[in-house]
Length: 271
Ligand SMILES: [Zn+2]
Image (tube, rainbow, N blue to C red; front, top):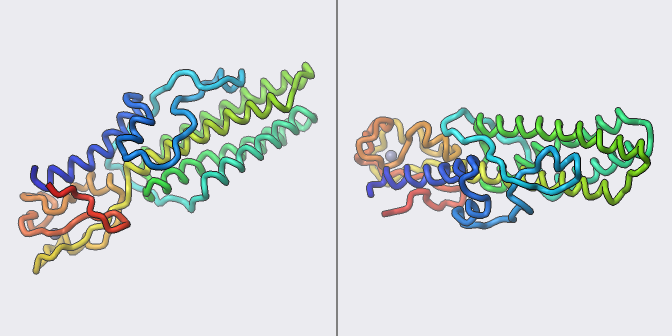
């Protein structure tokens, strides 16, 4: 196989497998195995339904979520926090809000506190995963997924508070039940972190390195040292050493450039 085909195939398999997972065609564990399987596994790879939140039950069916599309514009990743801290933060803040809610009449303050915790920790978990997988620039599609997920979690909160209000009014509220409920939120946050990780891995940062060729074409010279997510390179069709390239001024015939991971490993598999 020519270099161009190998690089394209690599980029596409990284992105394509992620897209398959997102369409629900492969499980998260299958996907992680396909990616070398490193990193912490989430506690489950299904989705939590609205009923689960209301009833305090576990995940049931895996539901497909959004579909990746390459070539969107990128956004820089906000500063990320360690995921364990994000998870602990959410657990602590929800517990505080839920306990205050069932033991007092200060309903609105508790709701607001819980909403703020979800609104902050859902993106923090997603971006932590994205960064842990080596991604830095999120795509439009990543941001859309995150925004939708954040809204979904905030919706669940409405129902959770309704259930808590019933418990409070019936004097059946129990701390252990609240802990169980919060465990589900934490497990969901694990899945959001995993989703970020998946999307970050599909968009690892790659840097263009000039090769040994004596004269470099204007395109390669311009690209030298540029660092972008894998999807950016694919979307722009900047494939090093692509013979007959439409995007490299030299046509790629004498090009000896490469795309490298941050650790210096070449992205291309020599074949
Ligand atoms: Zn070149």
